[in-house]
Length: 452
Ligand SMILES: Cc1cc2nc3c(=O)[nH]c(=O)nc-3n(C[C@H](O)[C@H](O)[C@H](O)COP(=O)(O)OP(=O)(O)OC[C@H]3O[C@@H](n4cnc5c(N)ncnc54)[C@H](O)[C@@H]3O)c2cc1C
Image (cartoon, rainbow, N blue to C red; front, top):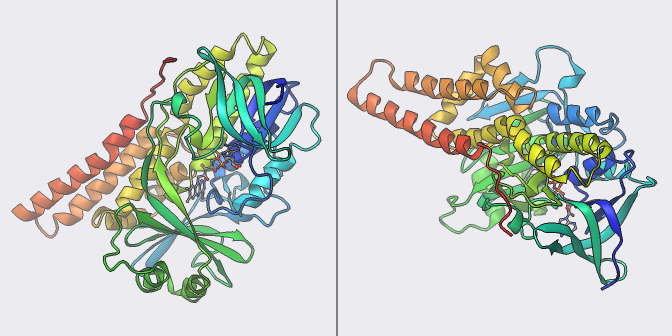
């Protein structure tokens, strides 16, 4: 193993969170090493719709041209589709550039973020796979990585190591009390020569066995993501191509169906697990978890990058503030303040992700939610402000959640309450509570002291 150099900061993973943070900190005079196992443009099905609030965070960090030069598509709102009926909700009822989201290929976006790191004096880009962490007693001192060029194992030491290596938590299991809960997977396809029911909109198709998402990722490509819950019904053990053609195809809006079948024929699809990882970090001096390695939620609401970028901005601000007063001395303050403050900002996005996913999979609540949002006005715009991340008001989210449940109950009791309808209504309320309560509990601050 070769001798190590010591940096102020080592960032593991140059994905959305790692690249954005390195770039935000690039002019602070801190020496930064950023390691990734793949610096080529990744071909992934994750992170392809950025909500308006995530876009705002990038602008606040000075990366105002983040969407330029790689055919990113503006997203103006969402279309919702159920059994052939559909409507759309704009992000905002005013023409407002600050309330625009973006659809793009994940790989192109990450390369754009990485382009901000080139030719920066204090930033060292390393091509390697981190295989272990180096501890000195209760303190994290750096990492061991397999260097891609020399194929040698190397040590890298840093005052602060930020672990933003994405959804794999193998490296970081000693830094969190949370257990990753895999809920199923998503299958992604690219549709070509395809129109969307609502151009420049994200789409949620309420379908079986789970929601289907669609949005533009370039000027001529549409990403479709199909949810497969853990125990999805595939009783005849159908081959995936047949399953997509026979079970999913008929649920796709007609305007997209031809392109969908063409994409299925090509069999060019990828899958990715969908996971729940609540943030339950363990405070260890010299270590901070960031992005998906700290916290994951269902992709239905496209909130992952917005949470990651909200955290990047908050952590970056704490590092900038404390580096002036002595970065090393204030390491403990940085990690504690970061972990404590992030709950308030991110809870609504995290809760909404699984709440909406569960509602869309519920036979009665899904229809009630569709009808409720279709009423428009504040019934649509306020929930939309939570989905976009522009409002982080937890009470507003809970109020709309229970108004949807109440809406379902009111419909259930029509034309007049009978004993069996009352029984069904109680069951719906119970289902709604069973959805929301565990999610609220996950979002209570839980920070643990070192157990090393
Ligand atoms: C199916 C699916 C669809 C999604 N769609 C959306 C969406 O539309 N909108 C949205 O906002 N969010 C979405 N997300 C979530 C979003 O992709 C993540 O929240 C976001 O990418 C997290 O950023 P990150 O930097 O933590 O991880 P990543 O962006 O995954 O980056 C991790 C980086 O670490 C590198 N790495 C990993 N291990 C190592 C190692 N050992 N050594 C060195 N480098 C390593 C990887 O090469 C990668 O570059 C989706 C997630 C899934 C599963």
